[in-house]
Image (cartoon, rainbow, N blue to C red):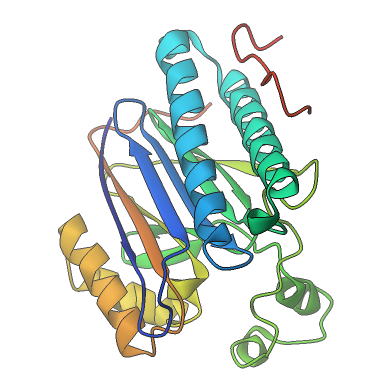
Amino acid sequence: MDFEFYSQTDTGRIRTNNEDSVALDERCAVAVLADGMGGYAAGEVASGMACDFIKSELGRWLMEAGTSASDGDVRRAMDICVDNANAAIFGAANSNPTYAGMGTTLVLAVFRPGRLIMGHIGDSRGYRWRGGLLQQITKDHSLLQEQIDAGILTPEQAQFAANKNLVTRALGVEDTVLLETHQHDVQSGDVYLMCSDGLSDMLTDPQIAHVLSQHTDLAAMGAALVAAANESGGRDNIAVVLAHAQGASESVSKSWWPFKRLGGMN
């Protein structure tokens, strides 16, 4: 199974700087998206550190491990890379007053033949577009989502809530963080969307689905999603990553230094 990728970020119509970052390693079928927070330019630093570090370290491990790595090995590698990225961002935030309080959300995807291992932290999201149906495959780590789960708000009421941007989990804010990971089957023709809340806050899921349904080319899909978010107000930075699965499917049967070693996964 082959995977085609596309990514795009946009400042939006209100912000003057872009705190969203993306990184792709197409050799290893790895995609990373992060939405930074905290002070002028600090969010940009946090999201950039997360994307660059995880792409580099996880990509290197996957290249060395090759096809012999089990899905469990890959999950452990993802956890270790995220732990190390968290330590790096947390250390920078605590050693440089300019970066105090910075952090970032994260969506991380590793595509393997017939399946996807996706991890996330915060309210940046992952979606699957299959057979004309859009499904959110991550669950926000946010106060709003907790209120929905508790029955305090309905999903419809949540669209108009004032606390949309309060996340309950972020990378680099504390000395430890938990990456939530899930595995999904992948079928030929699937399109996977990773996005920051600059997209999902501006467009409802049906609106996202409508945009995707109008295009077959990833670049056209991505550009149309960003344009639609801007047309709806563009109140935040916008980041999208798209991945298209092509080919036959297979059945799916902390310290600051040094960084943890990935080799061996023991």
